[in-house]
Image (cartoon, rainbow, N blue to C red; front, side, top):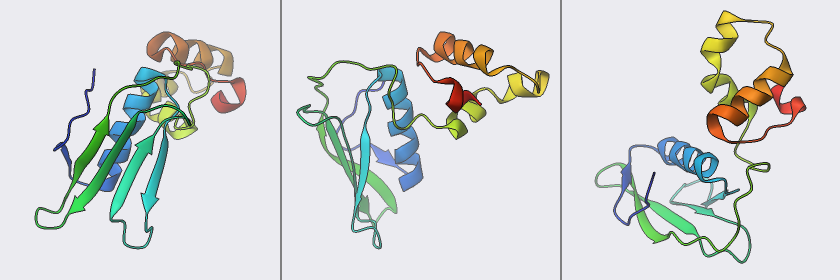
Length: 130
């Protein structure tokens, strides 16, 4: 279980996003990722629903060429929602189920939905599985 702390470092912005994705799926919270000043990519944040206190802000430390968590509030006041997580995309499903796809290339979508629910506790619809 990941516990966000001020001072955590990530090698790249994509590394930070990947950890946010894993955290969101494991915890069942639909987090939004925002990047301030898209061209310069100086700060990135992950926040929960409006009204929830959870937030994580990170910024670039140019001297070390890393991304450092600067602000954290780990407290969620919202409820978990395992059926609607915006970060859960077909690319994540494909990367986590790749071996099964290789074993059975005609794996039915219904079985994929059940496997993701069993393995990760997340509900996906058949169109995402397709």
